[in-house]
Length: 90
Length: 454
Image 1 (cartoon, one colour):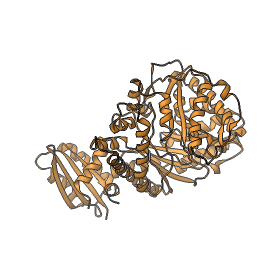
Image 2 (tube, chains in turn blue, brown):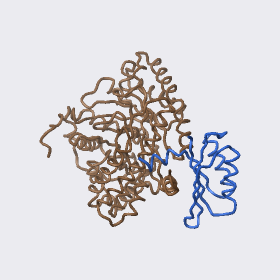
Image 3 (cartoon, rainbow over the protein chains, first blue to last red):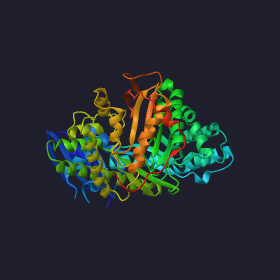
Image 4 (cartoon, rainbow over the protein chains, first blue to last red):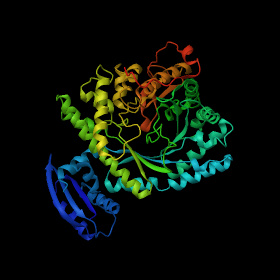
């Protein structure tokens, strides 16, 4: 499975999750898991997403989420899961 | 499954602590380009590099984007040019044409340094080796980003003192030819003892003759990550300190391993090695000296520095070795002066001298690196500095190197600005006493004995 990790970091505001989820749904990206936490009043969200059916490549999605983040005023990153697995799992 | 804290830890390392992959270096053998006709040789070199490296930069950028990890440099190393040009080059100027070809194709494939304008003369020099060495000042002055290295000694062969003496002159001449630019030519020139064949870091990268046709070597970095990790164990004992460094080095190296394998797969070029190095940059928070301070020194260079560096270097290797399937290159903490703000501060505070730096090189890679010295330093004195540093490598069976910059027209107390990753440096004093009679003896220092270690 082609899994990516999407992280959203920024000031908490109404509709962040809704906007990100709408974008993912529009692009056939399935959300497998969502977790969130507030660190120093900053909203931190992580999604694990399955991009097997996605219509776009990881780098295209990454660029578009970047733009979406700029519109909402948060930082959105989309990275392939392997970087986290290799760092934190033996 | 990965949890949010692990994801945030990784991204903090990247965003706040300067974690990056320092370089993907594509090693390319030019052995099949050898020709006795100079024009044909240049054409073959151009075509080979252009073909093999055409996708390197784009692939690196794609990996950066997909994994969200910066890959700071994409570089190329080639077979030592003295071996490749020997049949065609009859004068130093003939060799300079190859340097220009390398610089041209480097610019076209978009890499930011190309290394391998090199000669391996640890025991003796061939005619071609000597011609190449004599061409270095002009080659470095007339090209932009070609790097040159010369291996002058090894544990197995001893030290070629004729070549050491010659390099004293060559470094001075290189400084003279680039004096309008703070003698920057010397920042692209390094001399070695025990030079590794698979080093991905500049200026000393070349593609050794024992290597395959093409290979991907990756250099990892992350002084800022180690420094931040150590902030959380202030005051704790050495066991805790060492465990923390080891675990951090493991994490950093695993990212390098991932990038190396991915690049290898996408380019269809075998993975060579990961170079486990702590490579600083002039950026704030990306300093090896700052780690030494975090370990407990007021400044790098204070008593205890050599021990702290030895410990750091060893733990980085212990953590990194398990994280990568193949380790090679220089693998150790780099202690360049101009490229590390903490080192610069230590020099300015009077804590760090050339002699202390020499002692530090006994326990880490790679040597006296990016040190600006007065422009009126004699060529024989530079040869003496080189001989000292190479002797450390020869006796201790490790790589050592010298990259000093005699800045023409400047003296102790002045500063020199190289720009970019090369940074800036205060000019350091050099011991003024003469070693002329020593370095002018000629010949070579015999290989050392491999027993009776004391």
